[in-house]
Image (cartoon, rainbow, N blue to C red; front, side):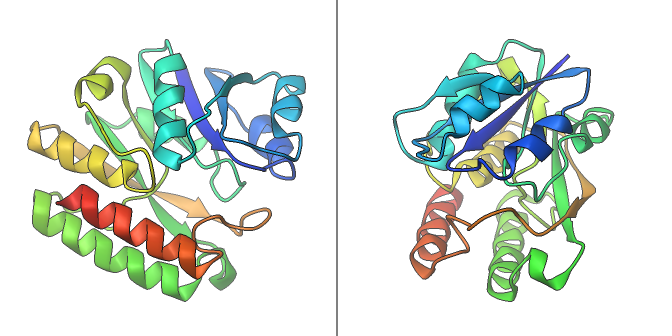
Amino acid sequence: MIDIVLPCLDEAAALPWVLARIPLQARAIVVDNGSTDGSPDIARSLGATVVTCAQRGYGAACHAGLLAADAELVAFCDCDASLDPTDALRLAAVDAELVVGRRRPTTWTAWPLPARLANRELARRVRRRTGVPLRDVGPLRIAAREPLLALGIADRRSGYPVETVVRAADMGWRIAQVDVAYTPREGHSKVTGTWRGMATAVHDMSAALR
């Protein structure tokens, strides 16, 4: 059994597709992070477990979902239909303690060029810091719940995935990467959709590297 944590902020348009793609061997935990578009009610109506996270921030939502999970393995996946939750099963089949999805855009619009270039630089810095040959610190990843909690990840904003990789590498975890399709998201991005969002993400991820 796998718990798939889905941080959610106003993803009403994407939720039906995302939750329809949850594997039978998994449970969806939708972590509502202050939605005003009815996302929590939609998620409940589609059979997901819904957790409310009052503290705003991607990392805060991820951590709330991790605390609510009870499966041995926990996956994290964006809730905007850019990633397919069924890919969590492919990641779970890899013999490693942390498996991260490497986003492979299906179209140029799936991943705006500024965000793609920023991610390339981030991945380079992560490789230099950890020695792990990752090409993308993507939002789809999976690991065992108890070891994840023991990492003591402190970031509660956009640096959460980077800190996960850094702390896991520092602990000597085996870290692997698997290619996953990355498609145009539903709705407006809270990160790459604005210069402020992009700047905040870069700041948070840089802090996680330090």
